[in-house]
Amino acid sequence: MTTARALDVELAENPNAEAMLINMGPQHPSTHGVLRLILELDGEEVVKAAPDIGFLHRGKEKVGEAYSFHKFIPYTDRLDYLAPLSNNVGYALACEKLFDIECPPRATAIRVIAHELSRISAHLLGLGAYAMDLGAMTVFLWTFREREHIYGLIERICGARFTTSYTRIGGVERDLPADFFPRLAAFLEEMPRRVDEYDAMLTRNRIWVERTQGVGVITREQCLQFGLTGPILRASGVDHDIRKSNPYLGYEDYDFDVPIGTEGDCYDRYMVRLEEMRQSVRIMAQVLAKLPDGPVMNREGEQVLKSVLPEKGKVLTNMEALIHQFMVGTDNAGAPDAGEVYFSIENPKGELGFYLRSDGGHAASRLRIRGPSFANLQILEEILPGHMVSDVMAILGSLDFVMGECDR
Image 1 (spheres, helix red, strand yellow):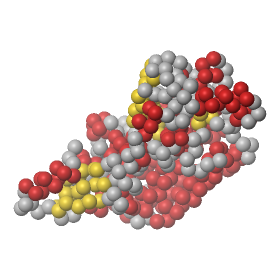
Image 2 (cartoon, one colour; image 1 turned 180 degrees about the vertical axis):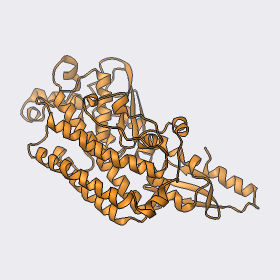
Image 3 (cartoon, rainbow, N blue to C red; image 1 turned 90 degrees about the vertical axis):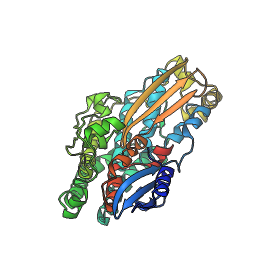
């Protein structure tokens, strides 16, 4: 990839070049976080582009190798911090595959609700910020209105709004409260009308269409070459959604469609995310209709006893349960045997994967996170040249990345 240093050297060695080197970010609002773009311009046309990342690097993978499997769960909140529940689910599923632990049916269904609420919430912020970047302030306010409802639902689930840490290895931290179900049902009834409002405001808006159609085209071949996933991949005509191609959490039992684009431009990426919100509502309605009864944590079997936290009520009243929690939560609970697994989920941004290798100890001997934003940002160097500076904002907004997940 072209680096900032390489562009500096190139301009220094060619002083007659009628080019200008500018920085967009890492404080520019349209970079949606601490992303720095080094742009070489000929007038207002981008000639070369080099993304500069790493400003938010926190060494999460090494943290996961130092902390126990359970202790790392809160750190997954800070990956795609717009969809923390989704990150929790992905990491827990990877650990359960390594530990060979089954999740109870009710906990699995609750995870689906959490997963799809995260998808809608992330898409709402992505759409609102994208619209604001292009001048549509009203849509930004509307999407945050709906996100506030979602945060209220998330708070009823786990007591937190932003950093949830709700999922546990073997299930979820607590069952859903009784008043959650009517509140979710009311949200699911209202949300399709809200999506229709965004649709009516933008989809046939002349300014929006001219700013997005034919801009930032990513071909099918480029998607496959650069490993792009999620709505970006599907907007380019590739019918791939992990919930369909490699189902988890029982997604094969739910009836939903995978929206596919044709042109691979900014407009198609917008349309795909718009329809994905409708499909998430459709999925959660099916979960509510057939939500099973039963426990929300697997507590059966010898391996489970070594790897799963005890019930909180017992911890507060029983010495053996307190000792059990201390052992599991510190350094005495590990994977059953040495082994390695890779598990990926369909995060709102694309494929979020966790590679775990264990030598049987209390923590992973190797943890590798496949963040979709990191892979998706690689395409910027390829597609930005030839566009005007004003198009850069539209392209960045259509990629909908999160730097916490990119830099890790």
